[in-house]
Length: 78
Image (cartoon, rainbow, N blue to C red; front, side, top):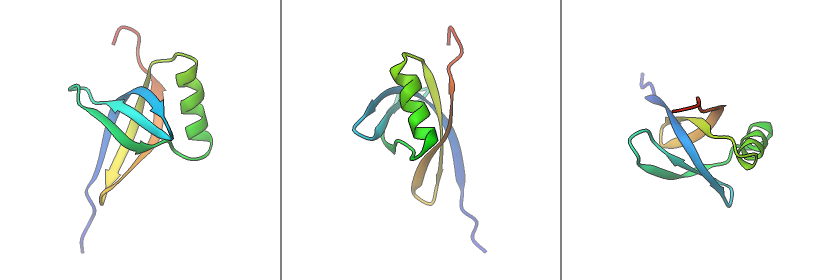
C-alpha cells in the first residue's frame, strides 16, 4: 500500500497578491504559488496582513498539492 509523504513547513508571509500568498522560507527562498485559502482562514490571513501584522503561514504539501492550513503572528524580534 502506498502512503503519501506529507510535509509541513512554515513560511513568512511577504505579500498577498491577486489571490496568492507570497511567502519566504527560513533560508530566504521565495514561494508564490500557494493560493489564499478559501473561507474564514483566508479572510483572517488577509485582514491580519492588511493590519500590518508579521505572519507565519503553515503550508502542508502532499502528492503535488499545497495548502495553507493555519497561521500565527511571528514572535517579536524574530
